[in-house]
Length: 174
Image 1 (cartoon, rainbow, N blue to C red):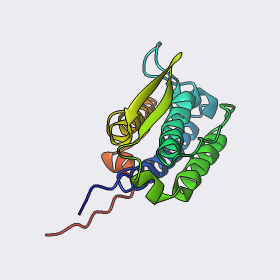
Image 2: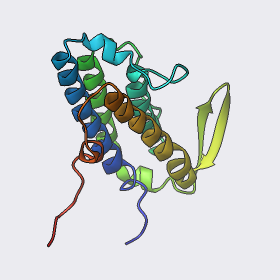
Image 3: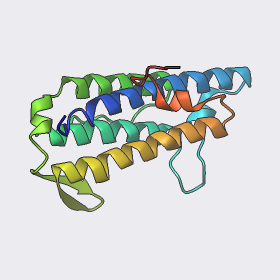
């Protein structure tokens, strides 16, 4: 089987985003059990200089939609960072999943040798598609996804590795 850019991007991001939605559900349940307003959860962070949960969720979505869009040779849709509730964050996750599932897999697959230009702070970065996927998009996606999981755990949410992994294509055997 040959390397497929789309198969290394779309299902991985969809699984991670869906798992994130489940992590948020469990974190909200934990907030309710602690009789804590969910807005406290959204402002929770691991360290003073790190993004709070709301911005981490937005960043996970942005990495998936922006990376996938650029690899598919289309302009990424702009999602305003205006979410103030868990429900709104879950809607953003759902919009992101719908967007990346709608992309042309063949266009993503054809991008491996194409140069991808992307904003990087005040400048722009340039990488071959395969390098952009493997060394920028996926590592950044998982960085922010892991931060969301860690924030929820730090908040006291009962989570296991399976909550992070989500619905992976796994068959258990004896």
